[in-house]
Length: 225
Image 1 (tube, one colour):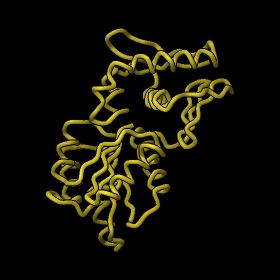
Image 2 (tube, helix red, strand yellow):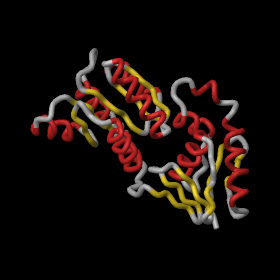
Image 3 (tube, helix red, strand yellow):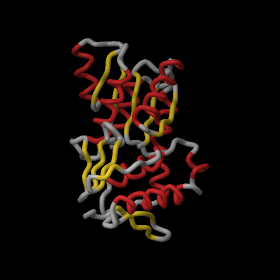
Image 4 (tube, helix red, strand yellow):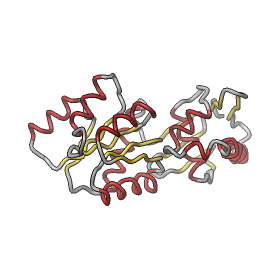
């Protein structure tokens, strides 16, 4: 999954980015001002935007308003130093999906971010299932026919994204755009290797696995068992 963090305080911004990368396994783009945030959202597809209100160029509330005016439904988690009820209601009316008041716990930020990503994909539960395949997004574990499948971080992220799109053909470009930040072009030649390793590990756990490759089109995760 790919997240945009918009925060003008450098140390906090980096702490949030590291927490989301290491704690949730997300690809993270980072900007410190609103004008650039709007440009990022025009040029990339995000699964979540973490948005501070007090940012330069274009304030966070205006960024949120403009996103919703152009029918961008990306989940937005607002960071605010204001806990006053009327301000909170105004944020939700603007289209915020959730908010956190500073200072906040990074563990809670990770948990809320995961919940918003799931909600954005239409998934409420923390366990994703497809036939005999189960992925626990909280523990980041994968089981197939009661066998634990040991995946690398990238293999896990690929499988998680495909499980959000079961039976759909997902292009290599779509995978890259959601799994990596703006450096994703450097990874374009290795995505096939990660998919190949993922397919091999799933087959070791069960011969019933079916991770298909469509030449020139992408990959599809079909029913298991």
